[in-house]
Length: 246
Ligand code: NDP
Image 1 (cartoon, rainbow, N blue to C red):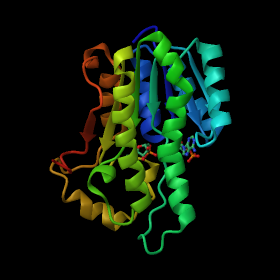
Image 2 (tube, protein in one colour; image 1 turned 135 degrees about the horizontal axis):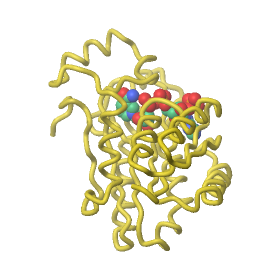
Image 3 (cartoon, helix red, strand yellow; image 1 turned 90 degrees about the horizontal axis):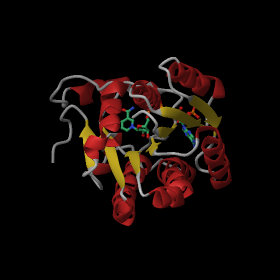
Image 4 (cartoon, rainbow, N blue to C red; image 1 turned 90 degrees about the vertical axis):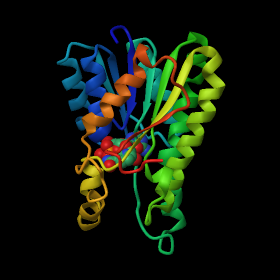
């Protein structure tokens, strides 16, 4: 992936960090957009630079289109463009629907679905002009099978799947692919904050009998970004140890 530039949202930690470092390991220059600590994003960028590529971190809340446009502009100015967009940033606010506030619903939809759309919108014209590009959206098996306590999250991730397929259709004639990855249970700060009893129970239903690692997701993202995946678009690839088989 030498000469390619990858932008990863939510790349300060967890799955996004693993994806950024995997793509850097394969030679891509890296831009990390994250709403959290710039120090943490900078740390990932520093680790990427240690792998011999250019890397930068920009603070950006992807729910705010002005911030998105400004951040994308900074990346284009510093690195020269974006070839691979990885929409990874996401949040949970789990509660049974009975107790879920309208604000909890909006907040999760806003980051996971609207934020993904805004990032794609900000780069859409560039991808069209370039007649090349890769968009990789991080969905979730929760968006495919539903999950009690995640009405907001599963709706947002199901939305990401629909968005992925629509963008795949819109940009296919321009040589741009758009695919989604649906992770199962992956060891990150997000799952560390979940109810650990429920997590242990879920583990029993994973055929591969372990939680996934961020690197398991990163490997699939690297494949989707590679030349070898040039004939795949509009697909959703599960990375879930067999938890959800259709
Ligand atoms: P983490 O919570 O570990 O990391 C998410 C990152 O996204 C954080 O750095 C967070 O920053 C950032 N972020 C949150 N909101 C915004 C925003 N508005 N704008 C920019 N950045 C933001 O999550 P994971 O690594 O576990 O998850 C990554 C993706 O994978 C998510 O989309 C998640 O839904 C999905 N996923 C994860 C699974 C898992 O088991 N872990 C399973 C299935 C899907 P901040 O410091 O502000 O929180």
